[in-house]
Length: 60
Image 1 (cartoon, rainbow, N blue to C red):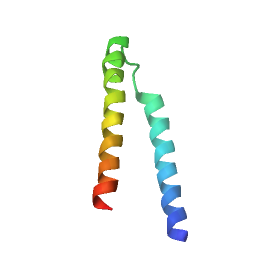
Image 2 (tube, one colour):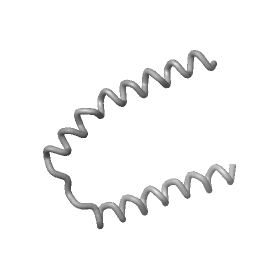
Image 3 (tube, helix red, strand yellow):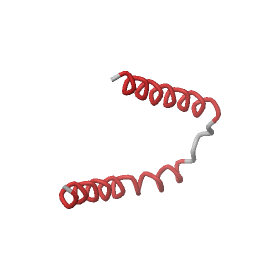
């Protein structure tokens, strides 16, 4: 159980560090690029859900 807490602590610390670094050094994106990227988000999330469901049912 201790290993689980250490792993979760390391994950959250890494995410916090990454978010601080990205907020400080990342440049804002252009609206056209944001629109192009956001156009692909919903289909990719849907595909990931379908693949995860198929994997769950076919691999048991």
